[in-house]
Every structure is written in C-alpha cells, then in structure tokens.
Length: 317
Image 1 (cartoon, rainbow, N blue to C red):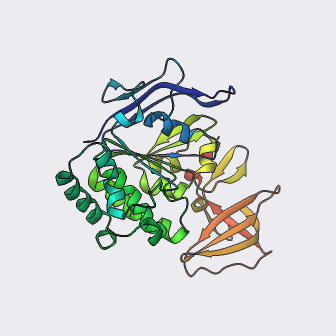
Image 2 (cartoon, one colour; image 1 turned 90 degrees about the vertical axis):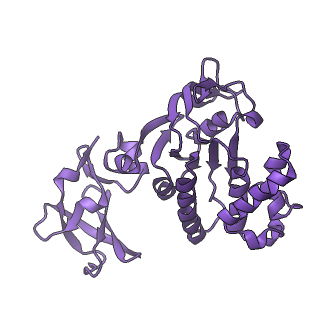
Image 3 (cartoon, rainbow, N blue to C red; image 1 turned 45 degrees about the vertical axis):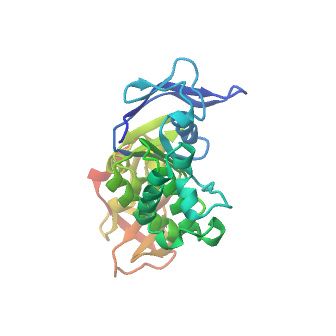
C-alpha cells in the first residue's frame, strides 16, 4: 500500500545554528517516484531524514502520511523502507536472512516470513544466492539484497539515499534500469536522493532540484530540462551555453551552418555513444558545447566554426 506523504513548513536547524533545510512544503502522491537532485550540502539528505523520522523538524513543521501527523512518530513506526549507499547488510547473515531481517524484527511468524523472502529473492533475481553471505557477492548483488530487504515488509514509503554511489558506471546504468522497472511494477511511493542528473531523470517521474536548503524547482524531468526556473537549475540539469546578454541554450539548439550568425573556435571534440560532443571557445572567453550528428565531419581543433541557433529554444534568465 502506497502512502501520500506531505511536508508542511518543515525546516531543520542544526545545533551550531546552520540551516540544513529552509521551510519546505512537499507533497508525494501515492505510487510516485520523486528524485531529490542537487549538489552536496543542498539539503536533500536532511529532507530524506525528516521523512524517515531520523531527525526532527524545527518547531512549527509537520510530516503527514495520508493526512495523519507522524512528526513525533519514531522511524520504526512509520512503515518505511530505506536503502543507503553503504547497503548496511549484516555480514554474518545469509542473503535470505538479511532480506527477512525486517520481517523477523517485526515479529512476523516464520511460516509467513519464508514465502515473502522467497518472493523477494525472485523479484531481485537472487534465488540461487540465497545461502551466500554479503562478502561472497558483487556490489550489484549486495545492492539488490539491500533493496529486497527494504521492500520485504511492504513499506508504504521507500527512501533511497545515493543507492548506486558505490558502484561503477556500467553497473549503475544496469541497476538504474532494473530499479525503474521494479518501482513501476510495485507502485510504492519512493524518494531517491542523488547528485547524478542522469539518474534523477531516469528514475523520477518527478524531480525536485535543491539548492541552499530549498527546492528551487519541482516538475517532470522534461519540464526541469526544457523549462528551468532559474539559471542554477538550468546549469545543474544538463549543459548550458551562455550566449551573452542573459540568453542561454542547450547544446541541441546549436548546429554547424556556414551561414549561421554565431562563430566559435573548436577547442576539443569527444566521441560519446555514436555522437561527437564538440567544445568551442566562444567570443568573450566562454565555451559553447554542441553535438554533431552521427557521420557528420568533425572540424579540426583550432578551426573556426559558424553556428545556427534555434531561437525558439533560447532560455532567458
């Protein structure tokens, strides 16, 4: 069963007076997946801890689950699942026992616990590894165990804090796809904290970009990318070209054109997944980035290149 979670005027001030989170309102609809995206120190983990009950908000703020005030409710009574970057698996327990630990701690009888553990093992495709210990697993397998353990008690809210941070790039991508499919199938309300924009865009049906202890913008991944609320959001989510005079654009708004109105000088070219990413020194000392189509000729480094600009795609801040 998914929950509708809500933060009302929730803020967090640390003992030294530092404001970890400014007064924030946030609604998480049942079954939604929200990515909290932002740089280190922006408040995203603080927000997650307040949802979990691992920290208390400043006086006047409230956390509600399905309209019920749970601000004073401890973490163990909020029916949430949590997955952390470090996995926090018990090294002396098998995979199956790790997955069933939350059920055992809640007093679920063994006759009910074992079928649920078997179901979770099938869900994360670890049936053959049920008897192994964590030190006998790969990083990706340990991450799946942590996810299965969090899901086993059927939480109303799933919280993930940088869940793929300890994995290499290829494995992050593979598990990202798996997790997206899993969350879609289970329809559990979920919040994912990440500083990886690609991860946020792939996993979240909603993204909240945070800066300086506040949410700068919340919307769908497409909204955030195509209609950023301010320059910080635009620069943090994707590449942003500064055209001068408060005008900006994404790389796809530029294309080589001998008759184009803009001119830059090629400084570097990088091949990436079938496309070439071209970096140009812009007039005034800045840099522009654009992508060449597959098969398009790559200009020599140091050569001048004229560019056409899609004026409809220009962003103004």
